[in-house]
Length: 137
Image 1 (cartoon, helix red, strand yellow):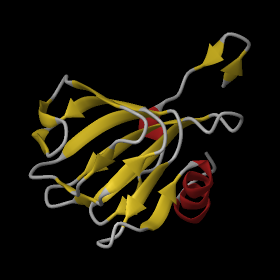
Image 2: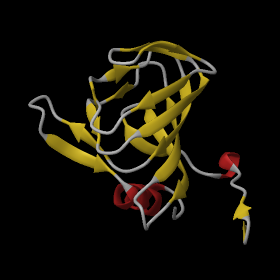
Image 3: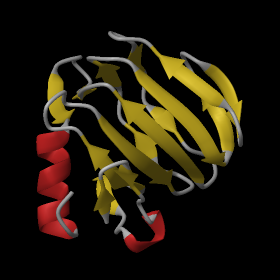
Image 4: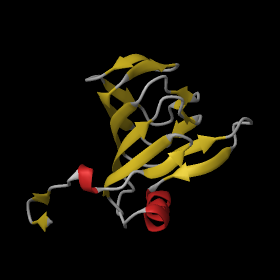
């Protein structure tokens, strides 16, 4: 429910939407004016987040799990990761179930093997996932 001073989101009531093989997303907040969004991402063991580039900065908080990110280093539960505008990342394989909170100031581009943009994770994509696999964002 929205109030003049803000609103509370109950993530356990939101569906996990498919993002990549064995990788899912919950949409917590979208700002249609700025293009910013907040999501939770859950990866199962063996999941892989494709190579991607952040068009704007993103902040990540690790809720569960640990692993190694080629560009930002080792991470574990409780860590905070700051990714600047323009940061480009290799594919991120998950060796155990991992859950994170990501607050993105704008879109991320998922890249193919040739480095070309295959998909854009933005509010439009999140709306599409919610409309086809869950409830509206």
